[in-house]
Amino acid sequence: MKQFCLLTLLLSFSFTITAQEKPNILWITLEDTSPHFIGCYGNKDAKTPIIDKLASEGIRFQNAFSTGTVCSPSRTAIITGVKTYKTGTGNHRSAVPIPYYIKGFPYYLQEEGYHTSNNSKTDYNVADEKAYTAESWNESSKQAGWWNRKNNQPFFSVFNYMDSHQSRTMTHTYGWYKKQVLDKLSPSEQIGESDFEMPPFYKDSPAMRKQVARVYNSLKYTDKKVGALLKRLEEDGLKENTIIFLYADHGEGIPRGKTNGINLGYRVPFIAYFPKKFEHLSPWGEPGSVSNELISFEDLAPTMIHLAGGKIPDHLTGRIIAGTKPSSRTDHLILSSDRADNGIDMVRTVTDGIYVYSRNYIPYMPQARYIRYMEISDIKQTMRKDLAEENLNSLQKSLFTERPPEYLFNIHTDQWETINLAENPKYKNILKRMRTQLKEEIMDSRDILFLPEYEMNLISKHSTPFEYRTSKKYKLKEVQKAANLSGFRSEKTAKQQIELLTSKNKVVRYWAIVGLRSQENRILNKYHSELLVALEDSYPPVAIMTAAILYNLEENKTALNSLKKFCLDPNEDLALMAVNSILYFSNKTPFIETVKKSRAMEHRTYNVKASCVDVLGSLGLIPNNPKFRQ
Image (cartoon, rainbow, N blue to C red; front, side, top):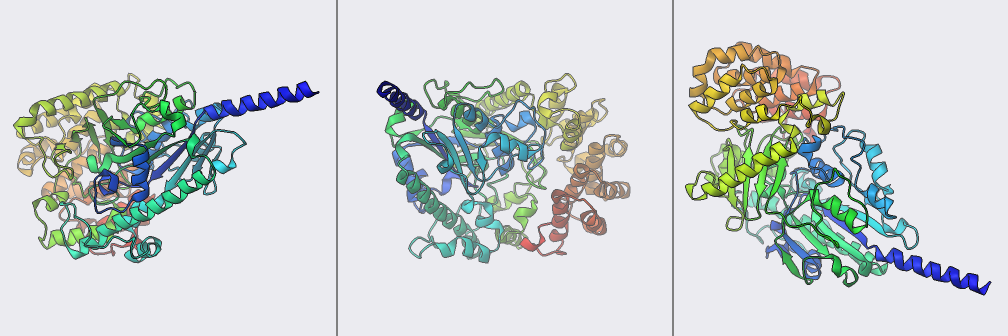
């Protein structure tokens, strides 16, 4: 009997040691935050002592990037471990089906004995998100945490803080922000409206400072909440068995940050803490070190599975950045930004950590494009008022003008991305290299988001975009030739695009007409007859874009009626394309009644309603405030 008890004790002790050999993993995710506004990243005006202390005890990463610029695409890339332009999940809240074998990566941690908990945001851009969430997490709720696991069970716990979210930093009313954030800080903790440097792309005025101060105070409040969580971890005696990752889901929730395919939209703070027991799993040196290694969200899933001791599935192609067998480093990353709410867009980006190159495929829309969730904010309306009253300098005004087809910024010497180097001959070799890297990645990955969203949703009825992209049906090489012309404004390019309007490939015709939308009117006038033919195109996205061009060019009555018809189309993707086009016309008045009807249609979804309200709001027919979101 004594021998049996001794054997049981030894086995129990052995199990405890084995369990403790697997590290606990804690994720702290901040909403809508750029490193530009955090103390340890060099902002002397910020008050983020908890985050700064964690960085001093861990590793601070200078070159960590989200793979998207708005929440659901970013979070989908994180949970699936697959880039959104492969899965087709890059358009914000589009609920795209993905193959059954692309599971949420915490599922694989569960197979290694981990308790997985999410507190509590999901926002995954996949079909049947509820089932996907249930399979990924042991628990996902506001009560979820490591405290619900079994004894000696290793945990993977995620805590998400909304206090730095765009709702706090800009979109909701100042009174709401004051109640939710400012009043919860003591006077000594608050950052005053004159206590920081303004980003140069904003007018330095009291009205704007009042709004930008919200960013600093929201991050201060977030910092306090992070401190409370870390205190609980320590009080539970778990800190020295827990690897901690702190990062944001994408860039800052302010105009020109979130939703924009530039550094301010992609770059995130990223800090990793390894307790002494697990320092051998960190390839980055002593605590307090700073790493310039390039990291993207594609790397998180394989790294967590590796740290847990699991086998990495074949569909995960990201790098292992920590553990016993880290991957070799990369010299560049490819990032993407697509539709955000009702704001249609498509940007592909390359960065080496010093330069950020962005290819704008729909550049006739500005950086500060119409997105209802942003239009309701005081800061956006202040900016539009200053624009109308000609109170903005050239940089500040550029947020509201058409974009160039390419951006190239040196983010080491120009952190706010004020000087576009794309047309500077001194940087032609860098531009050429990054263009080539982007082209290779698009073809290698078979970027499915070069299909219009209308087409994506048709495919999703009988397949998954992830699988369709590798089929022979997807003529990406042909599509790329047309898409690569988009945004380049010249007679030569326009002639090529006009010729492509006769292609048998409907998606080629789509990109030809999208590209023509950016051409100058003096050039388009030469192709009036060809555009009239394209107005009757059998592929609705081509017909819509042609109608937009002809109405914008000469307020053509046939084009006007075509757009009105599509505004009332029951297909949400087509209606959104039509209403979204109206937003960028100088004369929207003929569409007022049609837009009102479209908004009132039964079963209209948020995005179409939001664009309708943006049209009415831009004409002063509806107040631009949070009560009129849709």
